[in-house]
Length: 217
Image (cartoon, rainbow, N blue to C red; front, top):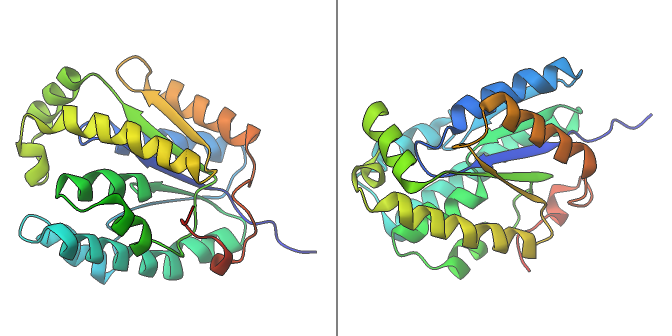
């Protein structure tokens, strides 16, 4: 009997919007539904990802975009695809939508980013978290900035607008997108909405052969 490919869920959104909290709540809820769950993140914990995370304040533009993409391919090859192949549900904190936002804050054009990510595995469900920009700024002030983008008070509003564009780009690639407002939904409520959406859209990004799953439109 052939092993069914696992589901791939990505969670993106501006810094301070509550991604890590929601990913943890989602993983717990999926496990309660009987899923074998692997929670991960990008930049990854592998060598390229560790380097990228440590130097993202010093490296920018096209160079940072290339590092992020290199880490993604390594992450897919060594962590994500092997887990999906044995039927696990993979939940990733940041993925392609974040690239289409964060690297564009560095003035890298979207066509370059899409070409750079040609050949990645697309998610079965892309979750984009949002909230009012004032709410995000307040959370960042309380939590503290993690990188240079979060130190600019004008960034949350720019990020929110770019995430709306990223959602449309993903929909144009036939990726199901769920936008959640974390200013009105609790992590448990958000996790329940994601599980419901995932059930309605099982495995509709195409075959499991990674070579056939590209981001080209």
